[in-house]
Length: 158
Image (cartoon, rainbow, N blue to C red; front, side, top):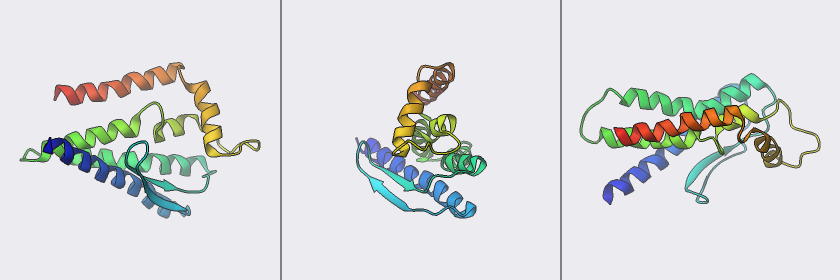
């Protein structure tokens, strides 16, 4: 039971680190950070809010900065083998599962969001819902889903 609590806390810390990746990339790219916050619903997590990033290259760099930081940490911890490090690796893998899910993640945003906001859209989420409904169950979505399912299988086997 205590291991589950520690693991949960570590995943929350890695959620914060993920958002720090976005924050630092926003600062590097000169993008205004409107809000850096914490939400409890649907699960406890940190988040960052910025204006719409019109430049596609900058948007991709911003979107993948959080995952890139988590992957860097994972590969730094991967060769280590001392007491407690296995729990850190599990927490990082869980964070990677959250970061790459095919339902609502930075990876999905990068795949489906248009270059510019649509003039008739009232919000980012309106655009997202419309684009995601076209993307869901496409070949790329199924490929993403299969690759995403392999991560927990790896986690369970190790």
